[in-house]
Length: 249
Image (cartoon, rainbow, N blue to C red; front, side, top):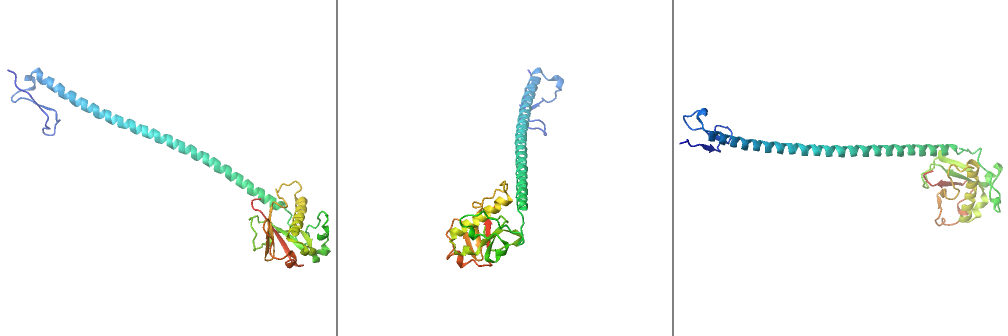
């Protein structure tokens, strides 16, 4: 009668849990073929378990590789986006530098006329008597300047370096209304622009470019109601009419 064989699932002395107990007082050569069959089954179970573990590990590696590939794609997209943004920034910077250079060139092209060489010539009109065209009459005239700091606002802080004399108006303008004074100032500015920029490279317009003017403490903003009183209440022989332009030129 063949000895009994017991397949134990206990872990004996730290060995594999699928351990086959060998009968006492026997050698491996004395074991019947059934014993080896049981061993084969145990090994198959172990191999299957190891294979499953390896497949799980391989799946994890594949998933990790996919995650890495996805990260690489995202990184590549980010790099391309940053490159495009960098190109756009360089393009914007180039346009900004060119615009600043153009504005600086435009300002430099405006003759910085001093008191000894202002512009007097103004096209004659029905109200031409209000204009002064001779230096000797400047004592009876009102000086008109334009501010070229291009901040786009009327400021009480006046920097002489930013002012250009464009001409003089007859002192008789003090008898005009605010609307009439506006037209005479615009006509003077139009004549000045035609003289210094006949090709209109500066993009200045004698009315659209003007936001208003200042005479001492009195400010006249274009498109708004005139100050209280009349120009005659403000204008004297020492008055300077300071024009201000819109920003961005």
